[in-house]
Amino acid sequence: MQVLYHHPAGGRLRARFDALAEAGFSVQVVEDAQGPALDRALETADVLWHCLYPVDQAFLDRAPRLRLIQKIGVGVNTIERAGAAARGIAVCNLPGSNAPAVAEHTLALMLATLRQLPRLDAAMRIGQGWALTPALEDGLGELGGRRVGLVGWGATAQRLAPVLAALGATVQFCARTTHDAPYPQRPFEALLEESDVVSLHLPLTAMTQNMMNAGAFARLPAGAILINTARGALVEEAALLAALASGRLAGAGLDVFDTEPLAPDHPLLAFPQVVLSPHSAWLTQETLARSLETAVENLHRLRRGAPLLHQVPAP
Image (tube, rainbow, N blue to C red; front, side):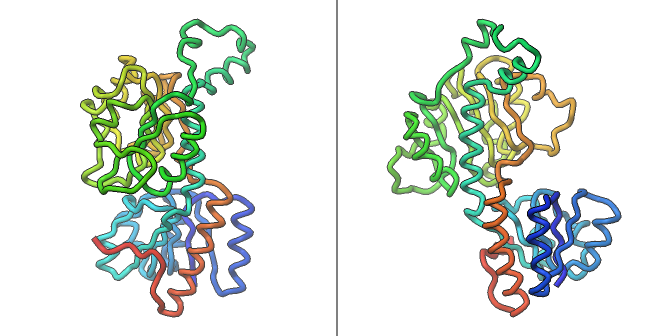
C-alpha cells in the first residue's frame, strides 16, 4: 500500500516510516506544498497522511488511486470533503492525539506574551537586556490572579484548565452545549467581558469563522490578551490589528493565521507585543508517535476492509 506523507519529516519520523515496510506499507514523504514530486506521488498514492497543506478538488483530481485521507490532527477544514465523498474516499482524523502538545504550547504562549519573552530575548542578544524601558516594564505580568476564558471545551481546553487553575488563574469557559465541569460555563459575550486572557479552542465552521470580530474585541477589558492555537480564521484579522494598534489588546500569542504561511511583510510582524509561532503547537515527537499508532491501525483496517477509526461523516 502506497502512503503519501505530505509535510516535512525529520529523521526520527522517517525512520518510523521506513520500519512500516515490513508490514507492506511504503511511505513517501513530500515536503513541498506543490511541485513535480507531489504530482508523481499522487499518481500512486492509496492513502494520504494529511497535516496542513490544503486538499482541494484539484489535489484530489491528481490522485486517481486515493482511498483514504488520514488527517494527522483533528481539524478537517483543509479537506475538500464533498469531493472526497463523491469519489468514495474516506476521511479520518485523530481526536485528542495532539491535545497534550497544544495545551502545553497554549500555556507557553500565554506566559511568553505576559512576560514578553521574545522582546527580552532579542534585547539580551544585542547587549541591551538590562536597559528595559518603563513601557516594557509596565507591560509585564503574571498568569496567576488573572481571569482566563477558554472558548471551547474540547480535549485541549480540558487538559489546560487545571494547569491554569494550579497556577492561580481563575478559569471559565464557554461551549455550545452544557458540560458538567469544575469551572463556570459562561455565554460567549459574558466570557469576553470577564476575561483578562481569552484562548480559542474551537474548530473552524461557518458559525465560528470570524467570531473574534470588532464587536468581540470591544467587549474585552482593556489590556486583555488573545491566544489562538486553533484556527486562524476564527479571528477577523483587521479587527485584531485594530485592537492591537488601539491598545485594547495588550498582546497576543498566535500559532495560526487566516493565510498560511504568514507573509514576510504581514502587519502582525510590526507588533512586538505579539508572540508568533508557525502553526506548530501540535508538532512534538510524542504527538507524532500517538498519531502514527492510530494512522497505521487504519492502514491495516483499510487493507482488511474493516471499519476505520474516527471516520468523519461526509458533509
